[in-house]
Length: 196
Image (cartoon, one colour):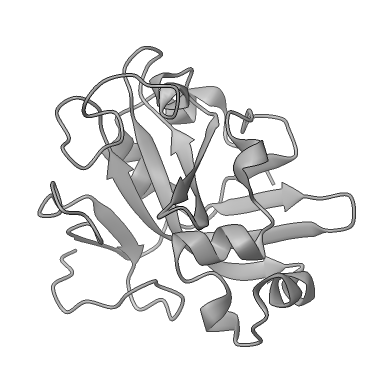
C-alpha cells in the first residue's frame, strides 16, 4: 500500500481527520508488523480551539504540534495512557488528529498479548488502548510518519462517515470534530447523535 505523503497532512485538521478514516496505521517493531484500519478520529486546532493542547501556546509538551506536518505527536493522558496524534496544518500553525480507534488487521496475537484481551472489538477501541496494542509509547513522539517505523497507509476513501462532538473534554467538546466510520463495531463509544 501507499504511505500517505507529507502534503496529505499539510491541511486543516478537520479535513485530515475525516480523510484518515479507512486508512491503515502501521507500526513495524523488530518482531512483527502491527496494523489496524482507522475507524475513529478527532480533530484539534490551535489557538482558536479550547480543547487543543496548543490553545494556550507553545510548550515543551506540545511543540511537535507546531509542525512540520506528518509527524507523530504522542502524549500521556491522565499520566497513564499514551495517545497518538498525526500533526497537521502548515509548519508554525498547530494542529493534530487524535487516532481514537482501529479495526485490528495484522499482528492481532501480539496486540492481544500487549492488551491482555482477546476480543477483537476491545483491542483498539480507544486512544490509549490502541497505543498499548500497537506498542506505541512516548519514545515515538516526534517520529516522522512519512518513512519510519510508524506510518499511515492510504485505505478505502469510500467509507460511510458520521460526525459528532468530541469525547472527554471540559472545553470545546461541543465542536463537531469527531469522525467515525458508521456502524463500525470497533468505535470507542457509540452515540445516537451521529450525523452524516
